[in-house]
Image 1 (cartoon, helix red, strand yellow):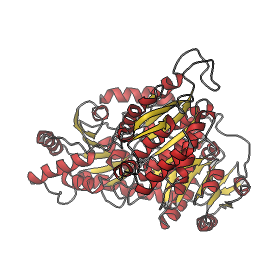
Image 2 (cartoon, rainbow, N blue to C red):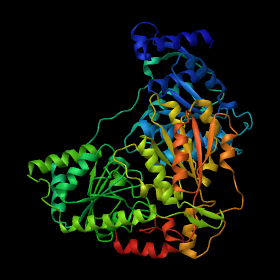
Image 3 (cartoon, helix red, strand yellow):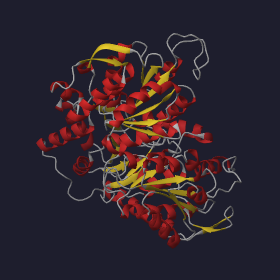
Image 4 (tube, rainbow, N blue to C red):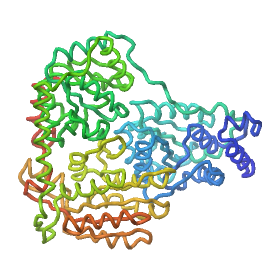
Length: 625
């Protein structure tokens, strides 16, 4: 396929805005001779996938040539990065933050393995992202370099199927089915995840004669589904009226439902508890909002979960830390579970499942309550009063930790800020300029989602499905992709940052504007804490190597590294300076790690891990949900 023909097609599509419009205008015939690579790029363009992120290799040279031509016409953009896992994180974060779709691209072998590892975040959070891997040749003339070295067929296809949807383009005209399946897999609410498109190297340049451009499928955007029978809402209302202590626990599937949730809580005299990924759906200032609950949840959120006799789950999976490995609902007699996925809706025993879109079903339930004359409760019940008292107790608990002065840390050899105090300062600074807060895994994440007080959706983002170290820093690449991007701040521990420091290079290359704050306690604080709590000893969760992160940042031309200091005033000034920098900045702040209880946010829930397993499992089976 010669470049002029490809260039003509790209120009026609760019001029008319889409494949369909170019064909309708007569600028293109619907039947074209295309390589499989070009059909793939056009098919993804038809699904509004215009961003590619990855590391090009020997297995993707033909696709890369197509991208070169189409990028020259402004139809796509390829961001070459230094690590495939970082590419997977950036594509996942992009979809979470903006809904914009992207494709991760690399070759099979180590690159695909690293991208595949990063796809765990998309799979765990239900995020639709394309992964395109240049696969081994179909003629099987001998081992292809970087394939899985076994005498079996389609081993990368087998591997990818374990994480999400997957399709191998062994036959050129299978491109239509592959793209249709990819569209559905990446576009189904509540059922999305990574979709792996494997393109054998010798298939990519094959020509599809008379390829029908109008056969290329578009995006999958199904309408919201809702319960058709009022009997379900009648039963849900009966259960609510027969309970004395109702709690709503919300997850990511409740996005866009904030006002509906508050309305329902007031009518049912209920309180609301968030999951770590659903902060801001209900404003923190809402009196019935008890913040986050779970194994690293708040004092008041966990108290409500423990005491509720009716639980209304909205748009959430029962992840171990979300419901304390099944032990959080100690007094629940009944569950009402709203979820588009029937497996999640039916997770618990004694459940009334309400399958379908959460927003549509919440609206349907409220309409039923309107018809039944059920209005907001007048005044607070004993249940809400008790929960409100717990929230006040939680606010006092937090303020004590924020007010804690720097504590002497033996590793740093001086007094440094506690992590809660430092996080609070950084959160307030980010909120003051309307920045999006990105939280990495570990102690920073666990303490962070207890400290955040978001008033709206999208103000914070964290990979709470896979808890992937290095996610937040990689997600900063989104500022270079989005046309109107908010300023973003990555909250990262020293361990998480060193997992994916490539953003320092990629950020400069692609024009990232944002800040990385490295909260450095010289250890894996979350794991150290677990070890001490379970076995009264730490083991191999720290090292003796001091790293000058400021020097590391400043060694890369275009990045500004700043010392965060050891006092609140010094840290605030460092953040202000970093936020003023017109590019990527990094602030390094040493933080305390030790036995002082004011040095952390505490733990108010259980978790089935380590030597707690026997007790937690026994409690789970006692409850019987």
